Length: 318
Image 1 (cartoon, rainbow, N blue to C red):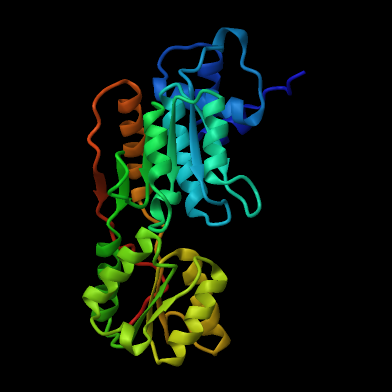
Image 2 (tube, rainbow, N blue to C red):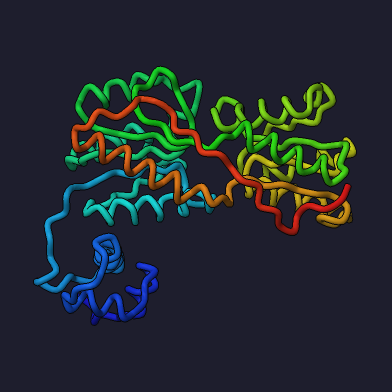
């Protein structure tokens, strides 16, 4: 037996008012199709059974593969993508990789067994320059439409949606320079990943020779990785640190505080992820996928979104 409907829970999940939920449940006019789908998707996610009059066949399942849930950027992306898919009448199927769990290839196989209409890859193996792109060529040959978010591989014929990582890193450096910082370091993840390599290229364009001075620290995309990089960069006298992710920025801030340094009074830290681009990129990715699903020729190219600097409380005069 399904649980009694709680309008407040559905409204919170769908990010609409309780009045809007009520209108949808009662079949009232005046609700946009996208909003209606969000309410129904919220009911599905919360385990509520739809009233008989609202039951409608889904346009199909769409797989969404993400690498993890511990980094907040991935759930944020997933939520927007799922909302966009639901708004078009598709049922999103979230697949998360976990250490020791199913691999990306195994998850794709499971999705194909369920007859998915298409797949969105978020920061998957397509972003790893050492991974074999033939897996995606085989997927395309089997007629499964897909789109890639974050990362680019010239050997994969598919739409790619990415932020301009080079420009973002250069922008971060310029911001710190304008604040008066002269000793600026970079905390970056493994450069076999395209976004990392691009951020490093942008940083070195703005700060030539920094790598030779030990001002580029390559580590892991985690708080712990940022902490280790922060220790090394602070020992080298950095007063400003550009981080490849917000998680790494937290680690650098922790390293600074352990040394008795204040952020931003003594050390300025710039993170990367918490961006207004998420909604625009997710919408573009879903749009490109559904064009391919509809049989419309989709340009096999990379759609690059320009970042914007959001100044918060972690940077100050150098």
